[in-house]
Length: 191
Image 1 (tube, rainbow, N blue to C red):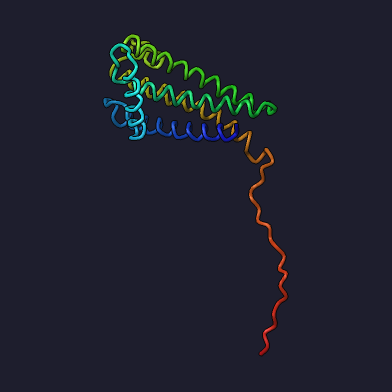
Image 2 (image 1 turned 135 degrees about the vertical axis):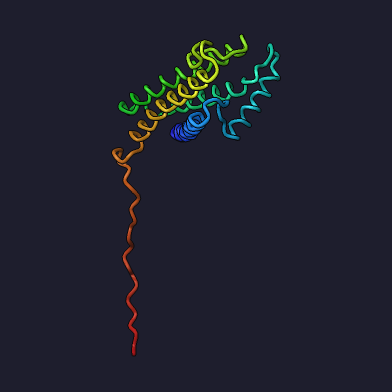
């Protein structure tokens, strides 16, 4: 369970870094379409392809990106849950993880609503889109800031729980070097 938690936390830290880069891109080019890294764009394209295999109404172009976010956030929520199961006896860590889980659960629910409304109505409607009231640059700004903030909050609590779990106060000492006694007799050099 600890390996699943560590893998999920690593995944989430990379996800947040992507949102930091997206936020920086938005700050420089607020009129542009939100930026995705090449690996995220490729994954979104693959998910859009698989979604196109399901006989639904017209597939919106953004279904891959919405499914990518939903999938990634479910992965992180699963990692937090696995971590919580592994840490049953550690009350302080459980409280911190519970906060991270609640934030992440809200985030997953937001993405379920976005994907569901995108499939049903052809438009992603949720809190991060002001339920359809925001458009253009305002919509992009709202989505970029909303997802950056909610990802950052969940990640900060998860990192705090990691510190509580594996940090120095948990008895994990830094690696020490053990010096071995020299068992060789010094050799004399005769002149």
